[in-house]
Image (cartoon, rainbow, N blue to C red):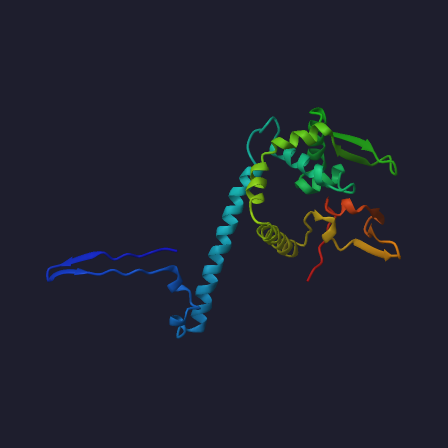
Amino acid sequence: MFHLQNGDASSKRGTVSTSSEVTFDSFIPTRSDCATRDPIEQSFIRFGIDMNLAREAIELLGQVARILWFEGTKHGMRDREWMALRFLSRANRFSRTPSALASYIGTTRGTASFIIGELERLGYVERKRSAKDKRSVLLSVTQQGKKFLARDPVNGLVDAIDVLADDGKIRFRDTLRHVLDQADAAEQRHHTDVCKRCIFLREDRTSSENKATVEFTCRLFRAPIAEAEIGLLCTSFEHHRQ
């Protein structure tokens, strides 16, 4: 809200004291005292207000991004190395590969390999050959790497969001997902998200006299998924389009 104050005004004829207050609400075209305003003019004013709010949000997101992307190092690691370690700690087994990591970070395979090498050198990540395909490599965060994530530069952001009430956290998360979903549609791409929201997740429920069971399957990779995995990140994620 903003205020316009008119104080004492002097003139040759004497002193006139006036006081008026104009609030932002008086400019909102949905007020009853604006009912006679031309409808087209109303829509343009409302559009301008909405666009300003949207741009304010983007400017704030840009400032938040500076916490994620930074010059130099923090606790001995560059921003992309932190991003890789953070992702690998929350990725499902289908996405803990060099190619999936490159896709998530938005870089080349060569750069991703360099980042993996640095994380290996520091003892935070290890790579193993896939039991099913010896040509494939599976990346895992070591216990040392998990402990080191306590120094993650984004932890301050996590704490700031965590103090919100549960419904506030859900609205914040879902708003960001909405923005990504819209950007995906415009750019014809898919962002990384959790398995339980993916169109490829199949859920089969069976019940008997004693208990009910749930089994999950990824239809893309044609593989069973444990219930504990459906909250993990996947770079092959695709959401249900409305």
